[in-house]
Image 1 (tube, rainbow, N blue to C red):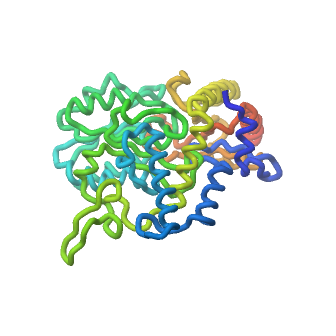
Image 2: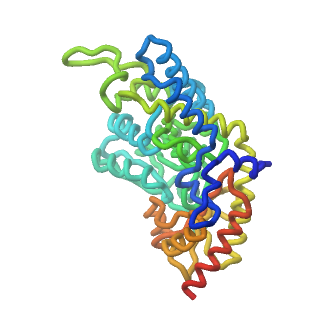
Image 3: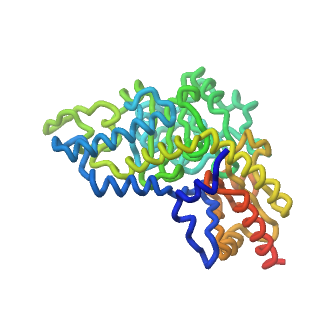
Length: 406
């Protein structure tokens, strides 16, 4: 079990007062807070290792390159990748997905093909495929959810066909917390010759998983949701797919040899990393991986199951409607909810005066909001530094919010 009080001491921002009250951070699904170990590692890079990578023959550049490539190895280990060659550094999940759209998608998807997404996808795993379908003439299909926010796997045969070229699915919903049966989807996709891309932005900080057990062709995740800096992320891809894909950006570092009218490309993953990379951010992401490994991902998962179970119990007792599966084995540490008396935006504003930070809105999932028949929800999301006392503070503040509109 996690020692939350000890963990909280690693996060300096949690000592902040907001409107004279202790900060209660319940918006980790948007971005997590950063432990001192990550901040210190990035400071150390800038103070004693700062240089461009791969290009210099002097010692400082070799130190920077070792730190950068060490972070790549850590990020691959974090998801069970067999080789660091399959780990491409990007600015985050959104860029990773768009990389696949521009490279693999444009090379492989044609008119008459189908792309299958789910009804609960974040816009970052929907808009790129809408655009690809518009560009190519492919058809975009949507696997629906049931009333508890689980995928209608009983309808999969109706939505996946011999024309399916790609399945794009979130491992964990940022709204419902639903943990999707990705391996079942991967098996079905591969049976019809399709590829599967997994959006693991929400899952990577919270769930231990292995890309090989998921049988993912592509998988994307972001640093800033898992105790690391913004502006850093990973695209994992099967090596044979990455080898065959054209480059994403053109410029320095992604080339092998250049003539006036043509060029050849560097080996993977560098073929997809044009220009000077976000070196310090990548190093910080590697430090975040090491921090989470030291804490223990299985323990984080167990802690969050307890947190979300307690949150659902307390929120429903307070009169809230909570969305998503009730079985905590099927969901992560996210509780999206509504109170009839209070609009989510008003609720978030009032809670802010109590020092409590939640997210309110459509959470970049407007098609899902329409399926739930709501304009918006409030969302409390939990992480390794949250305690039951944070949930108590939330529910007590909700009573005050209701009083404003009684």
